[in-house]
Amino acid sequence: MDSAKVRIRHTARDDAIDWLRGIAILTMVEANTAGLLLANPHPLLLRALGSIAAPLFFSLAAMMVVLSHRQKGRTLRHFVLRGAAIIAVGATLDMILWGQLPFQTFDVLYPLGLSMPLALVALRMPTAARWACLVTLVGSAPILQHVVGYSAQPVALRLSQIAAFPGNIPVCVRQMLVDGWFPLCPWLGFTFLGVHLAVRRWPVPAAAPPAPSATPNVPPVTRPPLLAMAMLAIGAACWLPESGSQYVRSGFSELFYPPTVAYFVAAGGAVIVLLYLGDLVGARGPWRPVRLLGQRSLLLYVLHLVIAALILRPLLGVVRLWGFCLLYAAMCAVLFATPYAISAISSRWRRAPASPAP
Image (cartoon, rainbow, N blue to C red; front, side, top):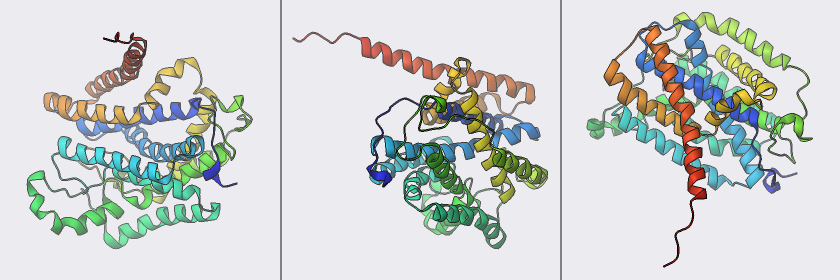
């Protein structure tokens, strides 16, 4: 059956997916807040936890493209426009927060925006072709790093250097493909992984289930994903010892500068294992605040960067570990409160009586 002709009428949210997006927000906030505020060297545990945020975002974004396409009939044009909007947000942040020209260092929103139409294209591919693209993207990364080189720090021109931008285009292309913050090789590989997970989770005809065990379209979770657990264990055993050779870039210490095949294997396994855990616990009441985070992910991404980069860093500079823990807790409290505040305001707005006609 052609997936483009499938329309899903069920509109309930998938609690496991919202829970997983909330976990991605929490780990992303930890990674970025540590990069901006915590004095180096960072503890290995924080570096490892921060390294799982981006794979979650790429994989989940692809899954939501599949679900939105099947549920609401969203077309390629919709995802091109949505991806362009995300890239525009990334470009705006480059200019406002970092004072640099956009489209140079390729922070996470740039490839994430590109991944949205790509996910729909990947959905229409045969399964073997999707896997071939994933393997190519991941396998080409170390080759490109060896041939082209991987710089310790991305190069970015300031806003005042706009006249020099045309001469910097070759560097921008290299950073987009090889050694920017999130180069397309291998990060778009997580897009193909997310599409594969979505096809497995919501086979055609699919539904958007409130919980996998409550719908015949997604079978109940009966056993742990042993292959993914093996990927996580083997990948981590090869990846974590590489931490000493990983770059720390402008204070950011995630363990994927550069991203390696071992990292991708470990992170891919972690995404699948966390999705399994989301099916087990994501729908439970105590996790509701985490699920609400996942429903406002782009807003909270922008909000936490603005707070950390424009308020906390100018006021406090870098802090020690105990100070970072306090700041991280405070940041999380603000982020947890934001979805509740938005819900309260929108509910009050909907209940407000209409103005009488003159």
